[in-house]
Image 1 (cartoon, rainbow, N blue to C red):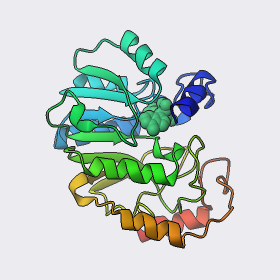
Image 2 (image 1 turned 45 degrees about the horizontal axis):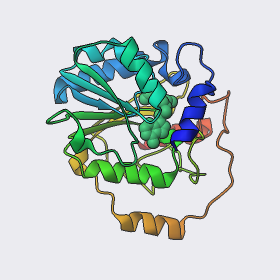
Image 3 (image 1 turned 180 degrees about the horizontal axis):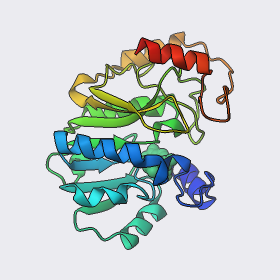
Amino acid sequence: MKDIFTEIYNSNLWENPETVSGDGSTVANTITTNEKIVEWTSKFGSNVVDIPCGDFNFMRLIAPNFKKYIGIDIVDELMENNKSKYNFSNCEFLSGNVVNFDYASLNMAQPDIIIIKDCFIHLSNKNIFDALKNLTRSNIKYLVANNYVGSKNENGDVDGGSRPINLSYPPFSLPASIDTIFCDKDWKNKQLSIWRISDITMEESYWEYYTKNNKTNNKPWYFGLEGNWWWGMTEEQFLEEVEKG
Ligand SMILES: C[S@@+](CC[C@H](N)C(=O)[O-])C[C@H]1O[C@@H](n2cnc3c(N)ncnc32)[C@H](O)[C@@H]1O
């Protein structure tokens, strides 16, 4: 997996001139995200783990105010760049894989919040499942992640692509989040949500049930209106999902 994302980084595959992490990570596109993270860190604690942290493009605007911030990414070169570019006394950067990271090894006695932003959209369903399961074994209290309302987590066999992920839908089936917002003006069904990790259970039997019963279909990853606006769904489906709440 490290090779795939190192290649994506080296080729700037997501083609954004401001950040190697792509359009969802520009300062302009993360205003709502940053406001919400500031609100949640004030409320729930600001010992923050951010995995993946990418190039720290927008998080650098708020992380210096946290009690402590540890940014982690699978691409070693990215972490070396972040270390040399950003010298905030409360911020640390490490290489690591979200699927199996050992959170007990962190130099942070009690992490309050883990932010997993724009990561699961690039991973296979199995790796997302394992990353969530790994989290439930940690002592971190809250998970912040994106959720694409209405997506059915299709085409989940490979790492390195991009597709909308709905953590509320099988095979992940997370419980209701404790707070959520629509966070991106370009991807209208994209939410940023926060869960209490003690509310999450990832039983291996869920995964076994899903793989046994899942009828893989071949719908394209992108369909709908105006480019990626309604990523993974039609406007009608989106409005139906919003109605359901
Ligand atoms: C779209 S960027 C998002 C980065 C950051 N969260 C943001 O919003 O700007 C995706 C990042 O995920 C990293 N990544 C992909 N798979 C990973 C994994 N298994 N563990 C840790 N980082 C991973 C990539 O190297 C890349 O930097």
